Length: 308
Image 1 (cartoon, rainbow, N blue to C red):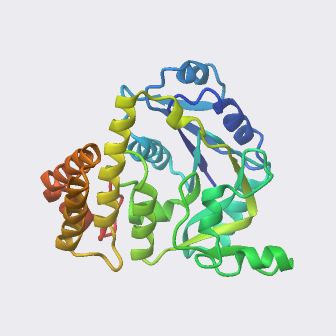
Image 2: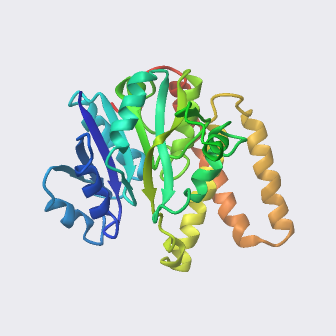
């Protein structure tokens, strides 16, 4: 059985040592692939000195999803049975990967299995992850913890973020990789939507844990202009999220109508700066709508999309 782990890095020197070492000390060994998105903080140089990893250095920052696709493709070309995706700012327990693989083997209907996400100190659930396992989204998960019910181990969810995913090769060959219309954020929602559309289940395994520290200073490190670029990219992602829905999808005219109404309201309230950013995001989406329609139609078919 061949297991590969894909870690995408971008200026991750603060975390990457702990991430890689946790994988190297796992009870089940995986071949570690690190795809670096042109880091400028010494991450690639550090990784170049690490033993036992395959380092792929991109010439520029291609984004989270596309970089993962490079690693996934590398793994499939080497006959991977499972691909584990792990964020650069996260690390695993000794038995995390082993428990995930065993659960996948025993529950082949699950196309994506995630461990439980704790915060970096292990004192609480990761804040965003706690939303994914709320009673509304994941029936029984929190109640079983409180009531110490050990009968159930794998809990179906409609979505869990891609900070740590175990993907069987069968899932990847039928669904493909991440939708490269998304640069960063939103690509995991699209992938989960595609998985559900193709009749795969998504699950959280309570017997497996990762620690996710997150970058709480992310928005403090950027200049005003950089923040506006990030905001523009975020607004474009929000439009893409609404469009790339495969179950109970919204008509395109409704998406555009709602976005235009919101834009006009901002103009009327003299929120000119925000209106300009949203107008750019919407116009860019409209300009590429033909490409996006084609991608969406392709994603409704089975195949290793975005990996060829």
